[in-house]
Structure formats: C-alpha cells, structure tokens
Image 1: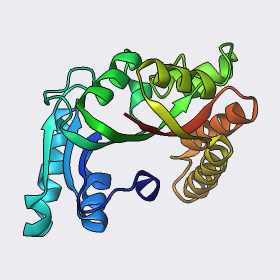
Image 2: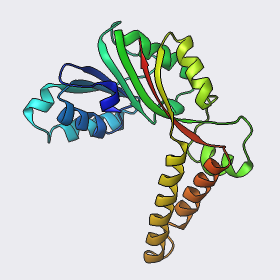
Image 3: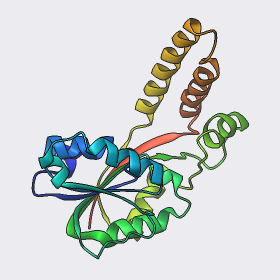
Image 4: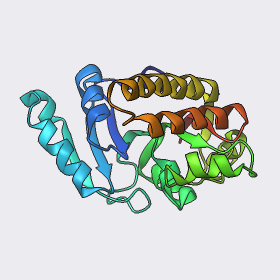
Length: 218
C-alpha cells in the first residue's frame, strides 16, 4: 500500500483510525514522512503516544497523535498529501461522510489509500451475522463495486481497486489453526476464538464477507 501510494519523505500523511500507532510509526521509520494519526479512542491515542516515546527523536519530530472523529476532522482543507486507513471505515456508521472528509483534507492530486471490510451481498446467513457481523460489532452497505461508486460520488478518481477477499479467508484459516493449537495447550481457552475464525473463513467462501483495497486520487 505504501509503495502504491507513493509515500516518501516529502509526504504529509493522515493515518485515519491509527489505533495504537503501530502502522503510523512503521511508515515514519520506513518512509520518512510526516504523519498525524487520529483515532476516536482516547485509550488507543494514549497508547500510541506512550509507544512513540520509545522512538528516536527524529521520528518523534515528524509525528503526532490526536483523538478525533473521522467524520469531523479538525484539519484545514488540503492539508495532507496522503490519507491512509486500514480496517477502520467499516466501524463508522456514516461511511459517506468519512469519504468526504478524506477528500476535503487532501491537497489537489493527493492520494487516499485504504482497505476495508465489504459485504459482497446484502442477504447473509444467521451464522455469518452471529460469528462475523455481530462479533465484530459492524455492518456495511458497501460491496466491492458499490464502494467504488461511493468514492466516485465523493469526487475521487479510483486509480486501483483490489478484491482481497481470498486472502482474508487464508488469514482467518491460519488464525483458526493457531488458536486451535493454543486451545490444545491451554485447556480449551481458545476454542471459541478458533470457531469464530473458521466461521469467518466460511462466510468469505459463501460470499458473505469480503475485503477490498482502494487507491484513489483527489
């Protein structure tokens, strides 16, 4: 994603939904860019700020973290060359407002790159609802293609879109195996989690869950 977005030492990047700041700090170390990380969780922002104290002075000078909502960013228009987001937008009820805010804070020609969960079809089984959507406390009205339509309606040019759903299945099956093995070692502590991961992989097989990556330009 960083390579496709062309992130380098001249970039000024907003990490939208930065969580504990792990990816933001990796981008700062490997790409040398300026970064502002925002997250709605004050706990996550505090974790990010504490983790940043262990980084070099050079990196700390290029980074900061703020508690903020993705639908109401406290930044001026056109401030960033890049907006980055991973596994965030599906948590936000007003996804269209989020896309508009990303567009607003980007400079002309700026790049928005993100990945997100998608719903390939509107009707899903009770098992998928229980083990995926309710468990992750989310829902989305975007499929792989309707997401692109929404981005274009927000005035973005969609430069690239990748359906990563099959990779999502591989990831969940791997997690199911790991947690199942841990369950054998720890008296079944991880059995419920392993089952949930297996159900998530099955949901992807049944086209009830998907994952997409989008590269867009203002």
